[in-house]
Image (cartoon, rainbow, N blue to C red; front, side, top):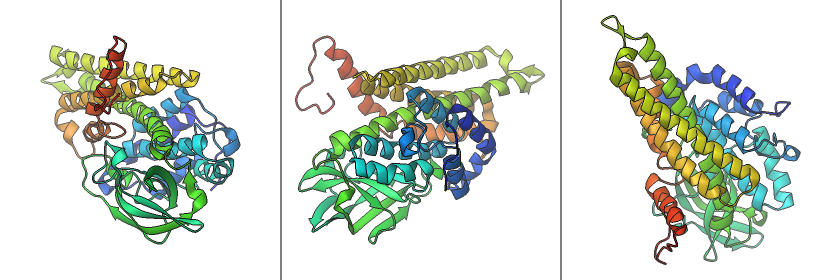
Length: 384
């Protein structure tokens, strides 16, 4: 597969979103994102939006990346999720990979010759990734990966996984190709949302990979490699939530104007207008917080990571609120099998959990606020 010529960005994303929007409900029903759709995203040049041009990317900044995620998120969370996991792994490689690793892995990721998965969570290590038990052992020139990862977005389709595990007791990150002997995929079906994201549990049964698949020095797997990926993931998820909220608001407002109840538009009812007003405020605030996080990221401001946590928290909450309001305004139409608002309401609840749950994010945000007043969390508090 070859990359589409030219700089990718919002126009390409908007065109792709318009072409695919009518299919999204079917993807959700079938619990899959068709291969031709993944290829279309790659052909549009959207898999390497934030990568430098030397690696086949578009060299776009955070603002442009955010708008791409909003466009795709307004169609299907799994479609945006495809971009998110690709960007997460690419961001980690770009920052912490060696020159040789960047040359080997980044161009195929940008072209869509390889699709990536982010394999960190486990049964006993979801929010607290420091508790992972996957083992990475040394065997001559190879590394051997043994463990089980859970709830991996596109785990059923990815060609290569960035895996978090313990190497000599130190948290480390390693790339594992999906076709290596010992890799098992266990598809997950019937989950609340993100149904087209081909989520799977993964088993790694003594999987051997070359030593040069280790990304970053041993001990930096969580704080550096995965930390970079997760920060990137929060940013793209946040913008995807903005897209969901705006799509639901558009659907609800249009319905309120055109739906007649005893000859009177729903929009004539004060309660409906009030509900839409609250939804608009939520969506607008989320967009502004995401834009601010993007500006700080562009400037390299040290506070950008914390602002991204704030933006993701606000945007996920906004997506849930606006989708819920849209379902309320749409009534029976909102709970129909092909309803965008109904589908996004389910997806938005998932967004409140991934890349940092709302409750954990509140601890980070609260501690950040109180530090400005001289507060220092107790040593036992892991959310400093």
